Length: 409
Image 1: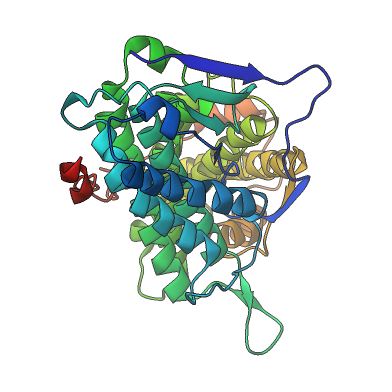
Image 2: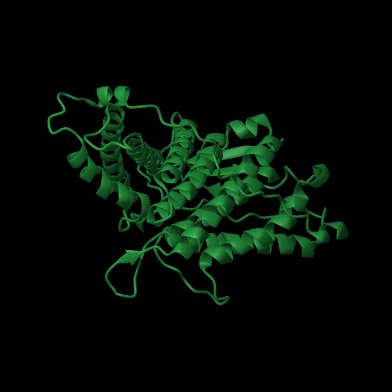
């Protein structure tokens, strides 16, 4: 059935994490780092020494690379490697190389499934380290790391680069499209993990999983990934002269639903240790920003055709948009001030559009003296948002075939 060990921090001990992670467009709570495993003793003579050495070498490669990459995963840089790619891509490839041989430990009820103790350092859990004697736990941890690497790559793609004129920072259309692919891939790993890997774990193992691997956190990250993909689509629509307000509103209303689902999955979880606090604040920030976009665009449509003044429903929608924009800005500030410290990249896309448009329209369209209004009254009078079917789905993911070398043992 497997056993588990969770190691908490000693009194006064602080988790090893960076104090400042630079600019953040996508929330990534660092990387869970695997600790070395002694494969030889628990496996004994059940499989060949050469095979054990290969299994050990593949995992050791991940241990070393993850230890080097973890402090830098969210930094705004692209580090070249001997293969011409990035360290993130190399670590992703190392995990993909490891999976086929790792899967042999769980194939057809392999007797080795519960013999190996797998240890990982956590990020969003109060326990510093979690060790479990279950190979499905290792598979789940690998998929979670593959997710975080995809989100890290999306973050790098969405950090504005200085344009050729040297003045304006931009995110290219190519980077935006590539980031959407990264978000869908991340969502695919998570969707598979929740539906196909978590059910393989015995109840007592699932009950004691670190917070990073709980169903709520995994589902939240899945919704966040899809939501940020839609946010990029909305930003592209905003920049397009051909996109109608109705198209933009649809994206914004979908965005509200994705972030609502993300918040519902983590609202009651005991997230801790800085990263957990930042995670909760990031979801609140983006949820409020999504509602600001949806109410603003809905207000514009409600006011279409008006030649004078602004309709009562449009006024209510714009006031709600203004309140949610203020909330998102305050929560954004709290997010960046929560350790490890971070900062906003130069505004672009949805955030820039809302920051410019809402204050301008509030001053030009709404009555100068609206009378006493508080937050609750404004939200109570806001019109209902349209309900659209969600368009983005996780990319299909399946586990690779078990490495053929298992047949030789």
